[in-house]
Image 1 (tube, rainbow over the protein chains, first blue to last red):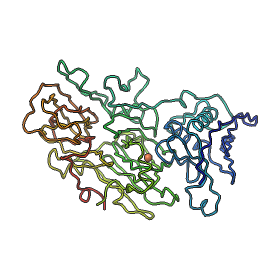
Image 2: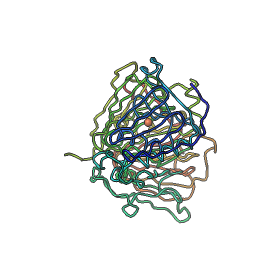
Image 3: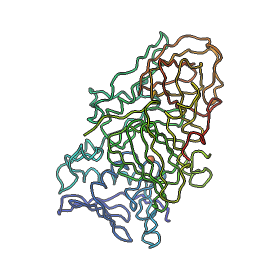
Image 4: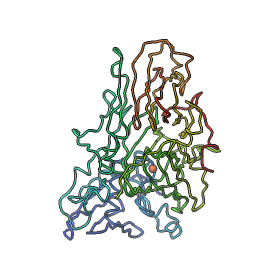
Length: 329
Length: 163
Ligand SMILES: [Fe+2]
């Protein structure tokens, strides 16, 4: 695999047929029509539904390429090397590997971010929110009409210590534009009582996490609610399907707070199926560092994603120094 | 169309599970259910239900008053069942600054009363570093503690996880 980093900026050129720009970076070019994205790369062509593609691209951009692998499907995706990022076709798919049609190119992370963000902005039409569940938003299809930069530029809230602590991220309220989601209308909105003695003002903190999650306007987009050392609670509200298959470069945990999600788990290197995991309220499971996973949430649900942010973990798991599982028994 | 939000409790939980469909094995996923763990635990035992290297999530059966705990780093407490008050004391005796995990304090720690928080299901509290705390459950409850592995962290994966 070629690991030289391409620092060239992308190019965007007009295309009169459907009104969308064509984006080129390195050896890749991205074209969209009314229904599909077409990616040309030196060994061939990749085609996908543009709605699926934009929903996946939204997460890749919003998360700054996230931890490890962001697979848009079994074929196309990115790998985060924290400063540089691989874009690949078929590199983690046994069929492409054996045919020799897999291809990967490494980019400077900022240059690739600029390309993907510009593509997302240009290709997202008015009325379509790639962060929303399908029942909550309009269609991604058709010729270019308007944009939805307000949705595309949505920033997730990242607490540094604890939501609601002095100087940290705030609670979600109607006044801040965070209304209760239609599928969480029955979630109690009471806040805890905090009684602080004189002299200790600001030192005690508590909030209603379930109310906070009931007011999340987006799906499959974890925020950070609390941090202990490098341990981050990343709660999120989930509905319909995780638009990516996340390939772990470290262990990650799921705590199902409400309702139910089924996870489809595959081998990270070959896309071969490995397991289906159904998590109901109160269930807890680890995702090992050698798999990819995609979640399916039939009703909007509350999921606590738990991450270890320790720098360099990707290398310690990648080299085999750390076992891919969180514990053995 | 049903959109009722489903939470669970020690009296009312249904476990999902791991189905293996390729080259894999269920124990790798360390699949458990916090309400089952709490049902079988001693009151205030800190059972590790998730660990990521040194970091832990510990599940406790909340019943009556807990011992007093203190910890050199922040922790958090998420109430998954029950109504729970947490009382805080600015303890005069602190744990070693580089120590990990909660430690038990014998009796009531000496120090000034910092106040208390009153929590219900879904509420989450910061347990600030070096503030001794006691949890008081007003009925049977379940809490998740975000912490670091320490002397009170109990690991019994084989008995809590799907084989
Ligand atoms: Fe993930």
